Length: 187
Image (tube, rainbow, N blue to C red):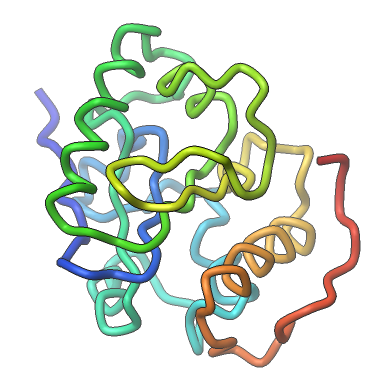
């Protein structure tokens, strides 16, 4: 049995990034987005959330910038498609409770498909959502998995930067600034 991947959370964060669930290699390593090919760390930096590209082992540095990481579903799998609808719905309920307990301002949901199922929002699209989760505002960004071919790295960074600017997080990288941002893909 693979251990549950620890959250990178604290009270009062500005943005918490919510992955669908940990990959097997991330869970084995004990660090978020450790899976080879995952583009989370490059996107986070290129979007201006961090002053340099972090390694998965440096994930706790995010707390100092008011950022955190958790997962919708805690069970590690090789692919998110291995999760059941029931797991996603239960994960959504669990996430709402965890969010209420720490009070972040924003949740950056990494991918729209898991969000739609977990929160019964079949028409959800990238960008800000009308509902809140556990009191936090919600913004859906593209899933940074290397399997998401719809968003090449530059487009992924732009979508993350849109969220960063909306959340009022300063551009720490100086790479994209605070917009306006070019269109990157259909929304």
